[in-house]
Image 1 (cartoon, protein in one colour):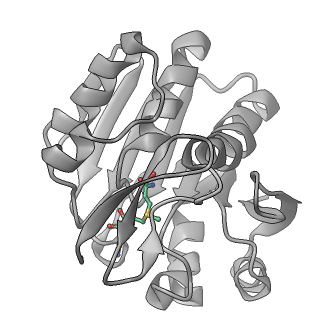
Image 2 (cartoon, rainbow, N blue to C red; image 1 turned 30 degrees about the vertical axis):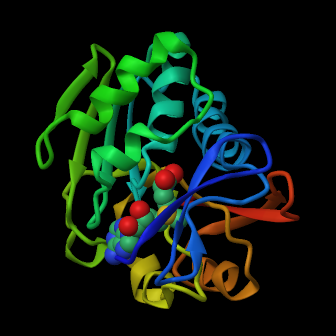
Length: 223
Ligand SMILES: C[S@@+](CC[C@H](N)C(=O)[O-])C[C@H]1O[C@@H](n2cnc3c(N)ncnc32)[C@H](O)[C@@H]1O
């Protein structure tokens, strides 16, 4: 999917630049800050806070990429100790040589888990620890089907201007059908059309404060 260049973002963490799409994998204002704010705080932690009784949570990530959202979820869950099933879609897995050069300012005690997340098998569930099962799939979202429901969807596709086919109403309908009741979808994107289309398929959508450098983000709940 195009040549990739390693770049440093404003908070010192890495991102990748896809030359063909002319697009970064993360916000250049801070990859780590963006991921923590949009996916971990507004997605994962907010869900856990709202449903304190949740003991078993299914997470779906659209666009696994560098694995940043996955390792941050794993790290948060060391304290929470909830049973997590994390499914990640990535049709264009990164080469280990690229992954080895990424710097997300992870504590050294988490580097083994980061490696394991990347070196684990694809297309089957792998235990990263007792409470965290990861299944990575090379499927594109359009080819992915599942009979389980997801409590949290990290929608981290490239921007609508770069990959418009992933931001269509039929895609959101599919995601809505994969979302559990009270489940949420979070995305860094706050475009009006995206918000309206998420509402059209049935989600209740909130515009939330965005990560550093971005005004807003969206959280869509299946109420
Ligand atoms: C904005 S990047 C996000 C990366 C990732 N979450 C991270 O933190 O590195 C978008 C990702 O979506 C992947 N992608 C592209 N087309 C896709 C598709 N049809 N279905 C699922 N993922 C796709 C890209 O390869 C890329 O890794």
